[in-house]
Length: 464
Image 1: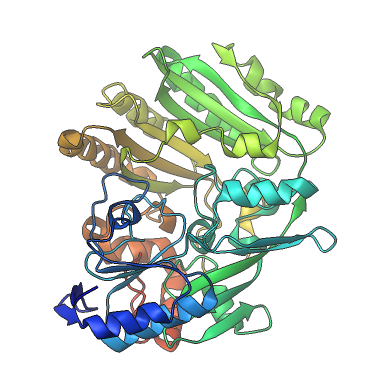
Image 2: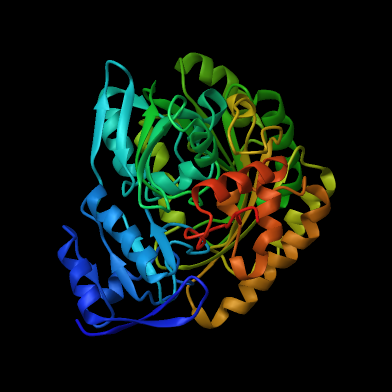
């Protein structure tokens, strides 16, 4: 491995001497991958094929010692740094151009304590891998809606999931994290150790360091009553009005989503998806209105393993398609907002695109963390998806036009994990994500990362 070209924190090009890179490599247990390495083309890829970045180096730590070495190397050479967990983010902030990617994908250790109902999991795990272990003991914690999402990125941004109504956000269930901060120190952050940092990482994203492991509280979760009903798109307005009224009345008892989508036969439909965790007879009583309304074209609601629920939408969002995302948080869904969604979806340019309402409320309303939007009841996520890279402009434009039309009906806030491309959304959307918490987060950023080493994210800038 010879001299390498890389990019610094300020965007300047720099040369990494071969001797320095070789010395770094000898300190690692995991691989160090550079351009020209046969592993490089695969290693730089992420879930979203719309992201095409070329890092200067990719470090795949075998453990915490490697993470420490990587942070020290980045500091010594003033390198741009990005941190990769599950690599599932829409804007692809986990991979940078020219800088050092700290890729945690080999760090998949997990240990469940079924007596204390806790789990310690490393930052490279996906939710599918996490749930596989915890469900062996009939336990779970709230965690996303796709099994290939990384646990770390989702949790650090807040962490919506199917169990949110009952147990809150994924970050609400954190007991501690191990985190390598910008000074190259491994810290434990919990309610009793560095509590200010612990507050910040529960919603503050990757701004405060490399989280190498996370300790969660677990809950008894057996088979859930879950699934979807489908309605014809011709009844879309009435279905979404029903969804709004039903979800608003039951937000503390079950989680419900709604989405216009294109069925496998090419027809447009409206789906309502539900999840209830608890006694199945009580779940059947609560969900009965969903099954009775319409009636639906198809009813796929049934008792299922929690792991089956977590992977239910995997096929709708496969890796290496092209994706683009925008979102609004809402306290309510007005008839006018419903009309806008229905009208725009009628002319959606891709059958793979899905705008969907994700329900908040329930236990999500409580908690003192960096996540700032406890009072909202809906997260409307606009997901464009396509296969031909030559069509990107068309699909991005459709999504942005729908987002703009819905702007008057949102709170002005946004869930940080749903912020789109940083070159478009920038600082305004980050401030919108953190609202009243932004100033406190900026002060903590100054304390723990004053030089903004961890900036290739939805970035909170240190207070100057």
